[in-house]
Length: 178
Image (cartoon, rainbow, N blue to C red):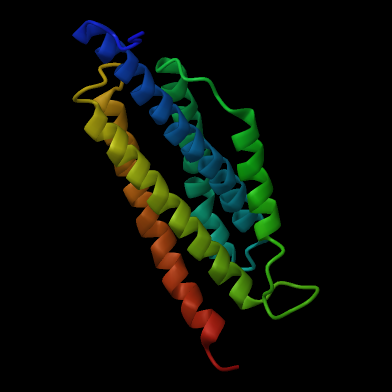
């Protein structure tokens, strides 16, 4: 017996379902990353020894949290189920990441802040890539709002600039001779 669909419409519907399933996996993976990014940004603001760094990253951390809410809205608008286990995995991964060795057993070292800024940089770069991907998909997925994605991209690129500026500064502080 031949179970293949007999019409192009049936094939298109099945292909469309598969594409949406893949997009769901992709967006839920980004949601896990966004969860970790929010936690990392807030942790860095709370633990930074440099008041200027905390002041500069405070607004970035707030924006990163808003970006995560925007991602949840996009997922909802597309009718994609949120995978809670991925949110938990992102949250847990960020907490485990704090256990890394920094050359000191009981207190923070200059390397701690530097490494956390590098992780935050990677998180923001991943977010930019995600927004760029979704922006390209607006041509075929009409439920995606191109203006929203343009705004999210612009904000993420500003975040990249702030994080990179402070990462560069912290590199000098972490590796200078004392």
